[in-house]
Image (cartoon, rainbow, N blue to C red; front, side, top):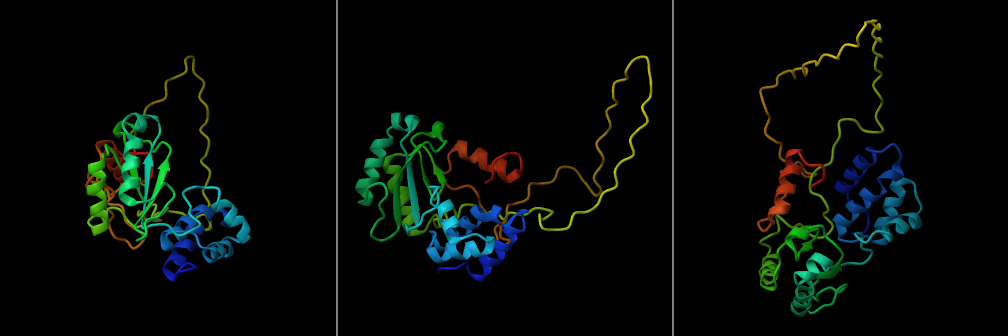
Length: 260
């Protein structure tokens, strides 16, 4: 499929509405296109260019700068093995050699069945669980050759399909805000400044109680994240390491600062 389909076109217009300028939505739109096709096709990039009033060359120039975007078809699962210092000391190169032998490809190559594409990655920020790898940007730490063999079998058999989506799906959580950038601003009445009071000693400001929220009845349970179709999303995987699990749970409950 070259251009964005109808459903993704609706999502694209919603993304554009989040920004004051259309071109600011370029990178999110490229991720949406890659989610649809698994890579960025020339026709797809031309469609994105039309949506944000840019030239196709400008879109391609942006896409070719970032290594998370792929301009050629790759496998269903993009496997990136970290070989930076912490993972290297924990046996990352031995792990990478094992994957090369099992898959029959070198880094940058794709298996004949188009199931796996292998990458040699820089730090993946999971040093506490070295050696680690990602599959379609989902983390798997404390990885061993036997652990990879079991993981690869589960991926091939589709047993992790609900946890590790096909390549291109960067985030399954629906992005939304209360006010769109393109929407009309609501005028507000400026507050009347308080009359200053002279005193011999400056008084400490009194602590005011937090305003009660109407209808509030104690702490609310964290709302499950939703995908673009309004369905609940499971962010963790059955093999998520402790470090990743804590980040996922914090993100889902709104306690963390990183996006899921």
